[in-house]
Length: 482
Image 1 (cartoon, rainbow, N blue to C red):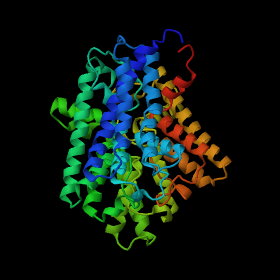
Image 2 (cartoon, rainbow, N blue to C red):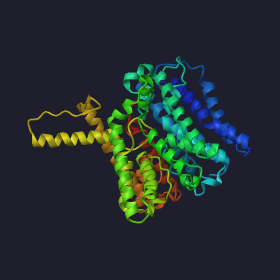
Image 3 (cartoon, rainbow, N blue to C red):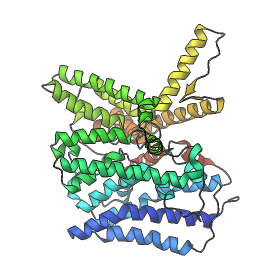
Image 4 (cartoon, rainbow, N blue to C red):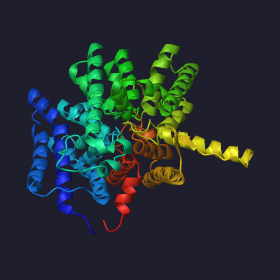
């Protein structure tokens, strides 16, 4: 491999894995000790494995990463780190197939929320807590989380952050990448703490409040109960979870700007947030009307309660549920799939194509219509005050083309296994957008256990594909002379 310094790369990679292990396994470890559930080894072993590898590589001299080396770290870590939670699931003995364990792990860290578990409540509470924490850790992004802990003597610069799909840290703040990473983590922790407190005030116990919060702010969707959020039987908890799903789907950099300026005006002035809020309000009104008109629920208030929750869950790509919506009117289900594909605001923990790309499409289409009507007009589209140059436009179209092709390709792969069209393509949508549950055999009352091991590996790859927004993975797989 040309100019690829393997030992320095492995040192930084092992350090990030160690930091992520401490973040992921420490709380379940303490909870396991507290409850005496005999699962301590599930959490100690991964921590010591990463500590061992990092300690071996400590003497290696640290260097500033090239973009190829950063790409290797930023992408490979999403394939490697889930192996550690796979080990935890296997050591517990509650998931017997390593492929199932890996699928569950990848689903957690990519904040997809898809599961192979037929009885979630069979698992020990410490293991269920681990599932929710995988959502939380993956939500903010492996690299952004780890960079806040990296020593100034271990220079990662802009390169390693460049390929993190969350795009929390934009180029104009890259010289202070570590400082901004810490601020983002602080905001993430604040949202987490506030939601836990609010859920406690609604009557939830501390365990439920923490488990649901970890999955909510990450828009992940893992729940410690088979019935998801409906198991709480608490309308106030549903409202709080709805609000924080939305907050998690807003660009986390807006929180940084609010912190820096001491003002929240940017939240209300941001074009993405305005469009996103409009989509949710329209979709909720439509769903509420249809649910009431079709007598799915007996009152407007009940229709609004369930319609709002599922629309926000779909739009944020969280995947929580308070009802088995597979029996709802097809127009609502199709709308949910559409807003899931559109996804959340760019730079958030949510998935999907993202709102700024929707705005891009609308602006380009508008521009073409104007050119047809007025051939002599010179029209240059802008997004957030920035003109779209040819390079940016080409990148947009490349992403959209790859995204839609991947969705169709993975859906087609599933049909080869004999699954019906609704199951196959809704599963593909659910995995690439990080939604989790789909329709048909993978609806909210079902799971992904019916797929073969090969299909689960394919879907695991698709989840990582979607979480990293495709292009970095394509570059990782096909770059030459790495």
